[in-house]
Image 1 (cartoon, rainbow, N blue to C red):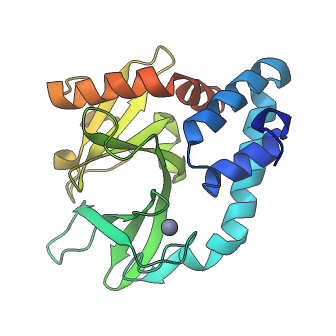
Image 2 (tube, rainbow, N blue to C red):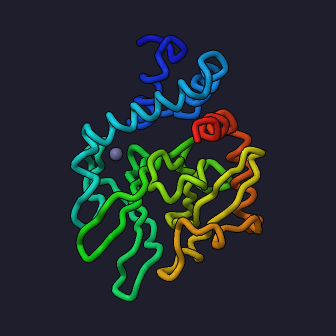
Length: 223
Ligand SMILES: [Zn+2]
């Protein structure tokens, strides 16, 4: 297998979305270096192409399903975990965090009665629980209304969805807590995001920035 450096940006973007490497932060660092040479626009196009190939390929049958993730779209295994329903209404419908514990990808499905529609596709970065005991997932695919918050990362602690963190160009975090994801709130509305972050979550975010700086810089550049 050729080294990561020898691969094209298209190939590295495909590799990221399909989780074809265990260490995706390493892949991000290679992309970060290539970005200096080929420019952010080239990286952006690579990810846009990879996203189309991904959504039209094996993932196609997982965009709309019944109940949510039962088989992982990547590994086809049942080793899946559900980490909480946000924006839940009285009937219990809402946005559910589904994750494959093998591939460490997640899908945020909007559940309406039994119909689950993909809202976000997220990819685990680093090891499970690596950041002060918490896991971080990069929002690689998300609804248009969320574009203003790019880049976004979903945080899971002890199997529970804690919330979403977004970084500005100075890498200052703002946080949308799971507790604020109520059925009367809107995910795309900035008023529910805050820079007041609990010390536990802040510690995890600081550790994540330290380990994932290259990945965040790439994600910022392709907004
Ligand atoms: Zn899987």
